[in-house]
Image (cartoon, rainbow, N blue to C red; front, side, top):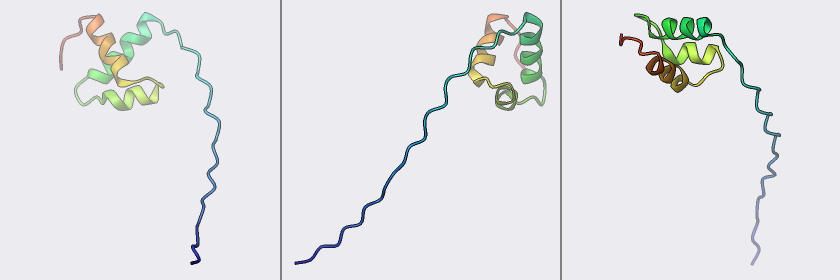
Length: 69
């Protein structure tokens, strides 16, 4: 009995090193939160454009007691 087997060779790319945390001024943080949570603002888009996770902007908003939209 003859069995044919097929194998796939997988290669791996190295995981990019983690970026150093960026230290933003209070004014810059406030600008990002204001932009993300303004009427018509998009939290995910603002976060992605700045290399952040959307949850970071949400936490910042809570931390500063910003009003809801």
